[in-house]
Every structure is written in structure tokens, then in C-alpha cells.
Length: 176
Image (cartoon, rainbow, N blue to C red; front, top):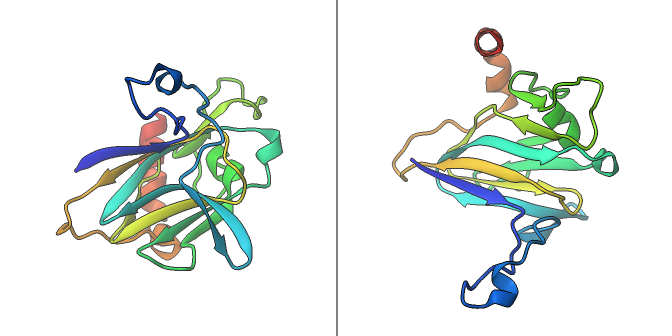
């Protein structure tokens, strides 16, 4: 596989010979494009065609983003396969629990302005697009791109729920 990353890097960093842009550091509020879905604007932060798997997402948790929704569109579908409150998903308060999603800070009382990570693998057979319901702040999405002949079962909540015992066992192992 090839390990790739989509992030909020400064899109004006295009030419190392242009010192005015090469050292640009406005690496927040960046995205690939906006799209319209069901009458709403969505900000695309990751898109990959072909089989793969999202392996990690990182973002800081900001109070003004507490209503932001993340949507994963799999295999060219117009309907999201995952549609969750982004901060709750990243905090581990959504359907994916710690240790697969968590606040990366030692004090559990602090839940704003700190980083959060999602490490649960989210596979897809033909492609994945991730959107947010608001302009993103900082983010990083790490994902694997597999060769086109790799058979991958696309993530679904039904399959996830069927693996409850396995995720519990792996989660306990990781926590220990």
C-alpha cells in the first residue's frame, strides 16, 4: 500500500523558487473544494479514488466547532456511510469509543483546545470522500491507498456492530 495524507496545509505553498509563497504558513481553514449536498454546503477535506482505508484523523477540539458534522461518502455514493458530530466522534463519545477515538491530553477534564485522534480503520472498496459541514480548522487525515486489484469490504455500521466483541477485545489489549 501507499500511505497518504490529506491535511489543512497552506495551499499557496506551490513553488520552492518563490520565497513569497514557499514559506507560507496559513495552514488552517484549508480544504479541497466545497460541494452542495441536499441543499447544504460541505467542505471536502479528503478524497481518494480506488480501494483504501482511513487509518488516522487528527484535529484540535474547538468549542466553536461543536456542531460541525463529518460525512464519509464511500464508493461514489451520494449518501454518507458515516454522518456524525465531528468533535463527538473525535472525543470518543460517538459510536467509536476509546481507545480508537480519544482526546490526546492527560487531563480528562480538559476537552477544548486540545488535540483528538481517531485510529479506527475505515476501509473502502472504490473510493472515499470526507466532508465537513463548516470551514475546517486544522486537520490531518492519514489513509492507505491499495492497488486497484485489492479486495476491500467498505465500512458499514452494520459490519462494525457485528464486530463488537472483537473491537472490545482489541480495545482492551491496546489500553493495557
